[in-house]
Amino acid sequence: MELANGTIVEEFILLGLGAGQQKRFLLLIFFTGLYVITLAENITIIMLVRVDAQLARLPMYILLSNFSWLEMCYVSTTVPRMLFDLTFPYGIISFQTCFLQFYIFFSLGGTECFFLSAMALDRYLAICQPLRYPQIMSPNSCYALVAACWVLGFLLYIAPVTLISKLSFCGPNIVDHFLCDPRPLLSLACPPLRKAPFVCQFTMNVLVIVGNFSFVLLSYGTVILTLMKSSSQGSRRKASSTIFFHLVVVTLFYGSVVGMYVTLGGESQSDAAKTVTVFYTTVTPLLNPLIYCLRNDKVKEALGRLLRRRGRWPRRKVAT
Image (cartoon, rainbow, N blue to C red; front, side, top):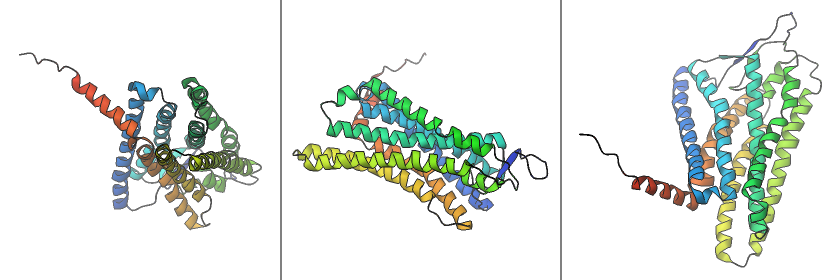
């Protein structure tokens, strides 16, 4: 983008987490470990759902396996770059790469919001409409719902990214963050900003966050009321446990995202924004598989079946 003196911004400088050399090394080890564990957890869930015939037929696990794939994409959009900048501080990122990261990261975040809504819908139908549930949430319906989440997530951010990328940038080109976030990018742009801030805020806050969060609250609220009226204590206890863990995931994700937009101004805003972003880009994807799946009895049983099948495979004879 063209500067006031006629030059063109071809790259940005990401300040990263702004830690000292020794602290950066410890953070590098810590976040590398988190990244590897997160990938391992989600790969395990995807593998189990694909190879286990029982899980592969259940709508909730079809959604969760696709959610795991989304989480892997989500962390891989930011964490490798963050690790690179911890190794080589003040990383330079090209203009095109910066906006590509902006688009992919926020599109994946929007897709995650739609996935949380899809899983809330699945629980609502399973508990509140049990007789119609098998017909409504057939495998084909689940895959159509998954496709809709991906398409909506990636469509909604085309306009904000395009409008911001078309702005003129006056310099400096230093982004006080470890990723290309719209707020620091807009702070570097020359006026007039025209409709870019409004479109970005409306898309992110109203269409994606508020819209999906309201749907999730309405779905789980209806589920909780239905469970309270249920006469079977055994089924109510089991369903309540599942809903509780789903609500934990929703709280972790939306709590951190909402917190991102209520932080104080000035320097504290930058520090708080980095902290919150680190939480929902690294910690939340690590916890989600543990909360959703790996503590689940059906997943444990599927893992046991897989291990038993592997244990029954005949060993190859070693040639003498």
